[in-house]
Image 1 (cartoon, rainbow, N blue to C red):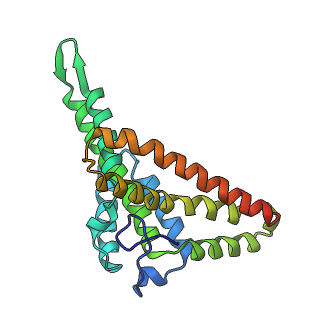
Image 2 (image 1 turned 90 degrees about the horizontal axis):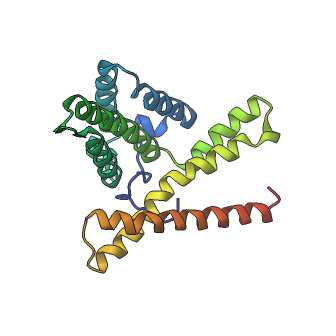
Length: 210
């Protein structure tokens, strides 16, 4: 995707690993299953998924820490909400049970985030679109244009991080710091940019009679 850099979260990383060569549709299915399984009420399953993702990241030669690149603001917001929910005011104390569940939820969210990051790191949007289109043809559902809809939706996921990186860089160049105010200011700007991109894409497709 244009504008994507190697160090941008969820950016495609060129390579020739077995994961890069694997069928894009199969990778998409595996990622969806892993993301859903991460939220099953079983810590053993969650632990297995985390270990599996670490192994896959090593196979893809990108490293496990790269899978969580860009997740900081997301986890900051989620953790702040969970900590607030764990706080009890009468009497004033921390609900350790609620705090534990909140931390576990962060691990589940991290596993799902890492799975999506791994998918887009080893798979291009074009590969996903071709794979979905082949399935659409096999099912004789070309008129529904399901493949186009899914590929457009998936394409907007890594685009979010491209826009975030650009706006965040502008924030830093103006002396902005990493704080809650940064999220309050930047997130609406990112959403606005995403809406503009969606409108531009819709107009381009309409001009081509889609």
